Length: 138
Ligand SMILES: NC(=O)c1ccc[n+]([C@@H]2O[C@H](COP(=O)([O-])OP(=O)(O)OC[C@H]3O[C@@H](n4cnc5c(N)ncnc54)[C@H](O)[C@@H]3O)[C@@H](O)[C@H]2O)c1
Image (cartoon, rainbow, N blue to C red; front, side, top):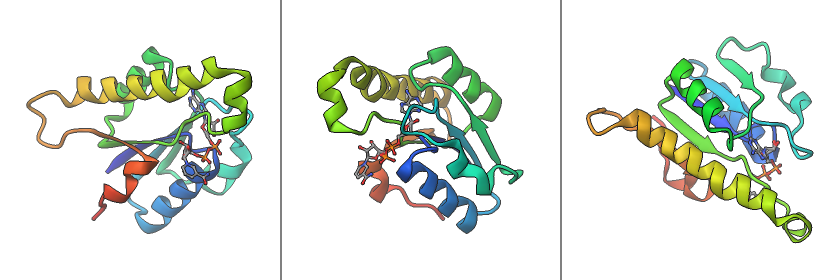
């Protein structure tokens, strides 16, 4: 299985990546993260040399970059942790919250819809953390 994990250089996403590579060593995990102030690439240092891991520095709001990544990797699933997550910052600069949390999520969802298509046997999925409890891995 190939999974794109957005926001994987953040707190929850990085722990998810560690967990998945540890529990499912044959899965391919691609981290898509634009490294805002909240993202820290050194957090992912323990998995950087894992052949089943790839880091891509792009924003989920960049439609072309997200489409290109889908073309390259053909993911089975996208787990979307990329977010502006600090509520206090939304008061100072709400636009970036709308861009990432709403537009970026829409880009991920539209890309998965475009690539899954009506005839695909295993449709692509996108999941927010709040949906994660409903995602079951083998
Ligand atoms: N931390 C918690 O306790 C907690 C609890 C419940 C829900 N959540 C939710 O989980 C998600 C992740 O939370 P977190 O604590 O890991 O956040 P975080 O702020 O630690 O990490 C967010 C990551 O997203 C990346 N990012 C931001 N904008 C991006 C963009 N446009 N494109 C690509 N990457 C981008 C950042 O660089 C960072 O690595 C959020 O939706 C948050 O609301 C977190």
